[in-house]
Image (tube, rainbow, N blue to C red; front, side):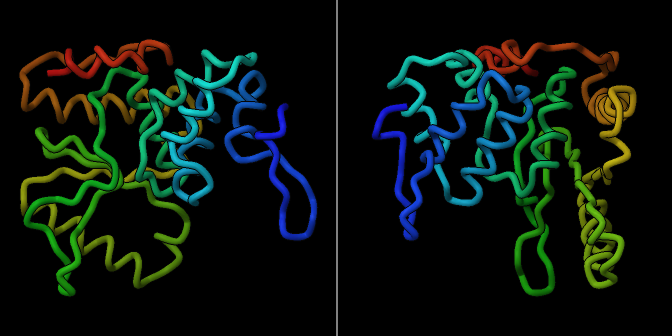
Length: 212
């Protein structure tokens, strides 16, 4: 690592800069982990995706191609690593690209704050909400979730609630993907089917242009 990859903390300890730390694990982390960490860096203000891209393109290192693929898949705006995992694993099964933290037109709380869904495909009015433990243990959060889902249903949206159980196996993710595809099929009339995309294929910018 060169000097421009290192930073000195307030206590005098030297460590890798965030972008350098991310690229240093390119050959050890899974592709999903690389995407999750890149989005987390953006979320917590450690490094933007553009800053990571600039760092990657300015250097030669093992794993550069993997970093490029991960950055082509990564998107700003995710609220958690689980939301990132959910989006990526579903899109690897051929689902259309999801909008992240999508503000549903015409949907608002009593406070007039916009109602959002974690992941959405607007043209089919289908959304996904990842429900962590706090959504079950916090009664106020639970009621807020119920009210929101009811309001979105009244606007013609079908929102699926997702938990860790839906991500525990490839078969579970397949079942979730098929549920979403069946909703889409009611709009398109096409036969729902699961695809198996590679990360490189998912990162291909031409993919979006071929999605209905």
